[in-house]
Length: 144
Image (tube, rainbow, N blue to C red):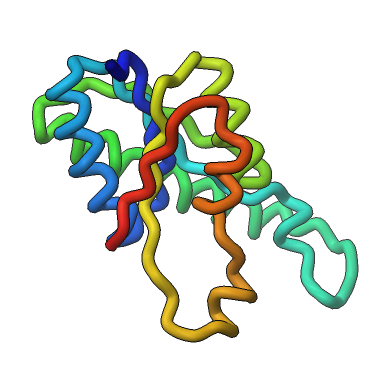
């Protein structure tokens, strides 16, 4: 039985479907819900032109991810759920697994959208695939 469910939420259609599925699981198992949004670290914003740190870009990204988190918490609240939420900064898989360990999650839920071309799949990589390999608990990948 799942007692603590961690949902890594990015606001995408796949993430919203994962949010709905997460609610159903929580209702069934009477679980605590934890919601996180993972913002790339400042070094991820550095472009090909070199290592210029852009404070304004980081602030815009922080605002964006705060909004994503608030949206997810609002959706859960409207469905009658109370959830804890936090914006984390870093590499998505590392931050998700670290947070799952910290809260002793029994299940991590992520959304996933199949990509059409092999080039898109290669370029983007698979967060859900890497997460399955590194997670300290079960992982539910919700396909959109």
